[in-house]
Length: 138
Image 1 (tube, one colour):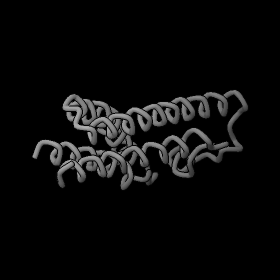
Image 2: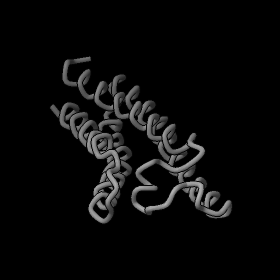
Image 3: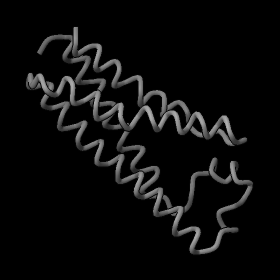
Image 4: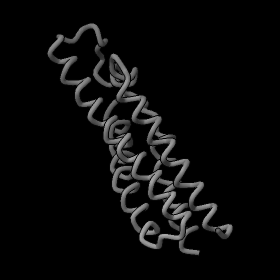
């Protein structure tokens, strides 16, 4: 494995870890993130049980998507390290199709509310796959 492939695999592996963190953050919580409450001006306790169920269900579905993405990214990173040329294109397709819309949602959320969602991880989730793609093409 050459140096650029090592950089690409490392960038994608870090992406996979980030997707695991996203999955844990959204999938394991018992209430919404604090910045959600900042945006609505309501505390978690003020919502009805039915509304809490809806919110947690959406969050857990997003978390499950993040976990699936982490598994796919991990597997494809392994394939890239093994020299599989199709992984070179599958990795950015898989990772960026999730990361770019997620970052745009976070940016829009911040723009349209008073809340401060964690933009750093969202932007990092886009940058790491871009680094991986560039390194894999060199």
